[in-house]
Image (cartoon, rainbow, N blue to C red; front, side):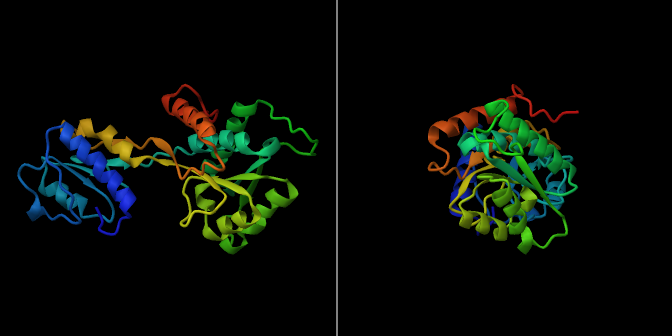
Length: 283
């Protein structure tokens, strides 16, 4: 675990791994670095966070130890190395965002900003519209407008980030959008600061730091839960696993998404992850 990790995140990881080790009858230790020479003969599992401590060399030096790499670029699952899989869940995030945005927006005035010519973003756009429909069916606006919701605006990949607010204005000014879902590649400070200044509510997959005042919630991988999901295989000596992080809600502003509405959103997310609800994006 890096020494400069923020305390809340570090505490969450440490608590999770401590509880898992206690339940398995193991001892637990936190280190800020690890070398092959420091590997104890009784060591069974290493959970490593970035930056890369040299996972490949450590795993080769200790073939009986199981390693779990969390968000470490360039590390792949093989042998005694397992990793948190990077398989895209953008359709699930977008579906939940569409459901939540429709719930909290007057007359369903919601929209999405996404990168142009990006197949995953296009899939997310379909899921976003389906999430809205899951909440309110046809979602007919009370007041007549010459267009339907949700509204979408794409941004060229080569566009200067300083110009992102101009694309947001198309949704806010021309199409009267109140809540915007930001595709991950679009979530930049220039844009979120501007949207916050206009009072536009935002949902995204990665909250800016500091979080804007109109940020509703974040839909992001729950890596702490993923460790628990991987633990039985790690303890059993089954390496080379790709572990998918379940999605969770974070950074929820109760003034924008009340606890009751948050429970409804969480239930939809749980149903999606369990396969009881489909995003409608499968071929």
